[in-house]
Image 1: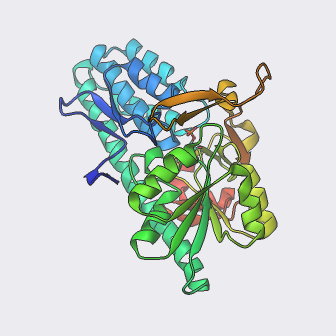
Image 2: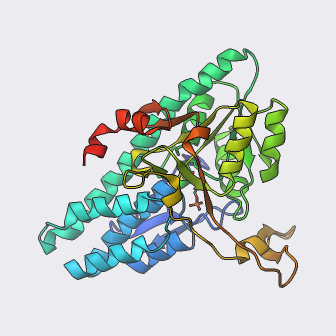
Length: 364
Ligand code: MRU
């Protein structure tokens, strides 16, 4: 996507040919800064501290983390240790494990002297594949928005999304936002309700930033506003991403997604979830087994903001001394999901629906 007229992906190899550049998402929306990763520790830290986040981008960063580790030491022991360190960074998004498995398959059987080149080649291919996958998710989700537009000629299609599942969460395009970008590019009148997404505000900070940069009409709303807007008939559909989808179609996504799905169900609003095949965990039969990341209480009791002087500061927002809990994801049961938008098409959120599209993977 373009920022200030320049096309960016969220991760790329720097001009030196080996170090890795990322957009530092902890600095958004107040400043657009890039950061350079030169070691395995840099890559692991970038994922853990959420300089990069979003399931597909976590996977892509882990892939380059393996490259950086192998540059320092291409032994079997170093490869294993790198995968272990990267896998431990964040627990919920399964794309991390998927990407590490892809990297292991690409380098494990190579002689040591070839491993670094093979790793960089696979990481680059994995990023290119992610871009193409997201583009196809966009193409497959686009007709859902076009049909909604046809049902109300001359009116705007209002789409609610939660967290950030745009290009910042992937390498480019995004998952949930890809169909929206395609609809906007095609001239359909779309408007996005952007859940702020407490506690880290990925909606207000990241989704609003990228929609604004692309010129897509949008409005940031408090997390609690979605149900009211649905009751008032102001939401035509919801589209979110997911960090892990189980074999039966249950979806884990940013905390608060489940409440939106419940409100959508009660109001007859279609609730779609967009995902690449790499987000499906075929080893889990239901959402109850998905590991839910528990993050620090400080994210709930504090907020970052910018003062009128332009200084970015962190402020307390809670009663001093009160404990806080911070589960970062929740699971939306498949029965609340109207359809899964994937790179292979749109399917029912059921085992049969997923297997019809991804039969080869289930055979593995
Ligand atoms: O904690 P994050 O910011 O990494 O969580 C990301 C999400 O939950 C997104 O909503 C997303 O849908 C999954 S990635 C496309």
